[in-house]
Image (cartoon, rainbow, N blue to C red):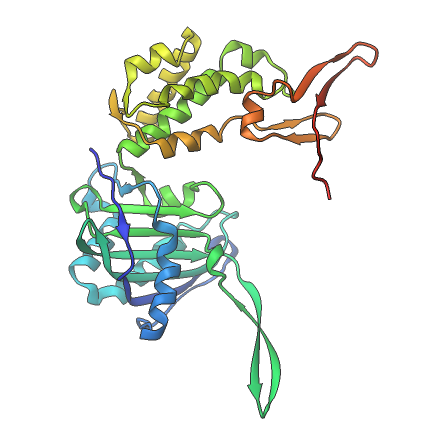
Length: 360
């Protein structure tokens, strides 16, 4: 199954908004939803549509999945109902807020403001689509404004949502309906929380070339880093000991457009231990995410580049010192860093060579 979309939002408009304040039931915080659909004024459309769509331009496609039947998936049915009859936005928006509230019982889940918006005019390869956008902001930001009153100026303080810090989001596109719609999600915390992706939305990744490239590159780094040499190393061992093998494994992708699993195992996974670890990671991918890895696919350079960031880049020592290395140095420190043992002190050491420091 290969689905990869390029979305355009230049002509997108917000047809209507349902708003909610979603608390945490375990702390006896309430759920409050708007009683009517909020309509966005024409002059505010460019600003708000930009805020709502900005996070969804370069994300991995996902889809709704249910263990027995897609028709039993609550969010899938809400989206289907809205795309069939958008006049039900208030009712379905309230249903989304109620579902989120019911899934927010864990003590670590923060309360927040929820926006459910119906978007029109989303373009994909020349076709105009609708989309359902769900945004949750878990924090408010204080801001100041200066206003004129009685011929003088006065300062006001208010609390509001900072657009760059919207915490979680979801975009459900009117496409791929028979397989669970095309869904994009983000979590500002830097990882997709199980609460948002699994419990509330119930989505799984769509198996396309981007996902295959991402997962194979990540599994390659994990596989070579788990070899006996790396496992035997102490926690404060230099990162290049593990990074060298990972860098060599990822170099397989350089200059290639097509991935071959057999070729990859022969050229990148050079030890039985690395191949066994890769096979274990592949099995977990299929069992936990339901993604069956193809033996051949088109390589996404962007996703492979992201995997390089997984390589160890921070050295932490029991003396309280930390050294952060740039990727190039972390993989190949020759001529820059010296690592050894001081017999007199019976301590290990790191010596850094440089020509100029940038400490202010």
